Image (cartoon, rainbow over all chains, first blue to last red):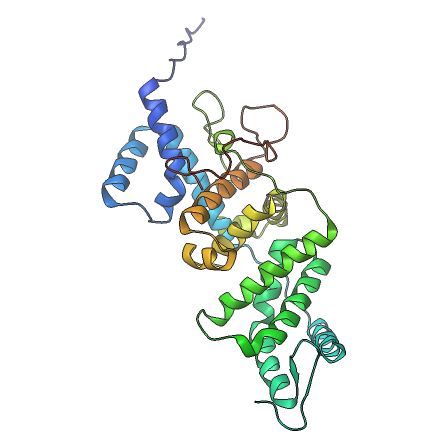
Length: 93
Length: 220
């Protein structure tokens, strides 16, 4: 038995324009930097557009990763060495 | 006011007990933060240590001029940003590149459904994976420096857009524009995908005639 595949629908032009407009402002949306009416418009679009919703979710995740990404600390011996080198450099100038 | 027993270096920085004590306080309170920033910015621990040294050396020399118009950490970030630029000029690296917003915005006909790897885990869980952390820093270090600086200051160091603007000498609008491009770039790199599918590496270096020019919603 063969299953009939539905031909993918061409993207709605109006929707694509809206998607691009939204994706240009999405950082400001995630940072709560947009006026309320614009946020409401974006939320409405996201509710109806799973593709944009996915992009927004992954961008939010990227930002969260950046916020949580820690790095190694400077060792006590390096702190002492750098301080000593700074004071030596200042006294030489 | 320097004491009678104090001496001055050629550039006028006092070298006496009082100045050293003031410097030590500054160094003790902020060296960890500055090293963290330097490491995120430079990638290599050795370069980060050089940047910390340059930063605090400059801070020592200009400590007497600090008027408290900004917070001391913002002042140090500004010194570090300038020191970073000086070090970069000395090394004569690649010229600064622009990120094209059009190349970074996903299109409706293919690469929209991108996801950061491991969506079944929380960001905290994923961060425990060395691989993801490595991917993140690798992506951040592929950013052209002016975008990397904005992303590191805003999303990693937690400065406000206004503070980032003060550190880098940019308007808030320009900060937000660069930040948006930087975030989209990192997101793409984390996905291991490129705009347009299996094409050449992401066109970080793609020059645009209108780069840096105001362009409606997200222009500089």
